[in-house]
Length: 377
Image (cartoon, rainbow, N blue to C red):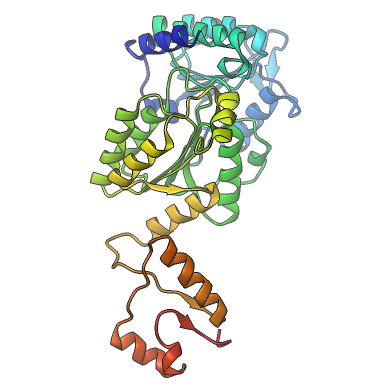
């Protein structure tokens, strides 16, 4: 069954897409299949967030039982929409999903965003359903994000194409750091915590099972987009290691920081990603080696990854080697110095000018690196 699925994915790569990544992230029109007035439902929240955050494009609610939703005319079927939408998000039950995707493709939809679960991550029946999605993408040229994802958040385009309650806020924020995540729930939680930290994200992109569009499709786009200053990735499995290496090299050549959290470092992590997005984690050692060679910053915590990206964006340019440790505790400086040295991160030597300035308020032994403020904070 894995062979059938992967063969279908390879075939999908040969299809000529109707729509490019830039238009998927900046659609002129969006259809919501399963739209509702109730914010207790996925389709209702998606409609609510699109309107609340001011999406300026056309919004087409699709619901066969309603004539109007959120003050907009509702359509019985996607085929009844006046013009083919750039993107359709499907908030429909898994059992109706494949038929709905077929109808979207026949209607000329550019990209289908599928938030439903129950595909390759759910066993043999799910693999068959996912293979059907890939076949549709291959035959029609319609692109697919997902399934098993949370959708797309694009603050500068005022687009919250996602059902997460974290979007029930007055503003989406904005910034120059772009986030691509296989995990949808993790994507929205990172987005929310970054906003709390005062860090705006340019994109929040969740990909789930990567049945068609995958991490590298978006990474390549972001590597070339001038407004993206740094890229953060949450990776469970890569579809094409050589393609990832080439995209990472492109980021490095453009001076654009690329940071990643990769699960599957242990046997337990490998098992977890298989059950989550049906990903094959591969060799972490091989992945880490590629990251070292291409300058990718590997992190173990998603929030730390975003904070590090923010620091690199705020303080660009070459940096002298070495780290300075400053603490109000002599014990703290000692612990920090040991931990940094054990990680292969040497302490910097302070310049005579810096040491002389510190000696005006500290004893000479305290005015070197590490700097012990001794309570003078």
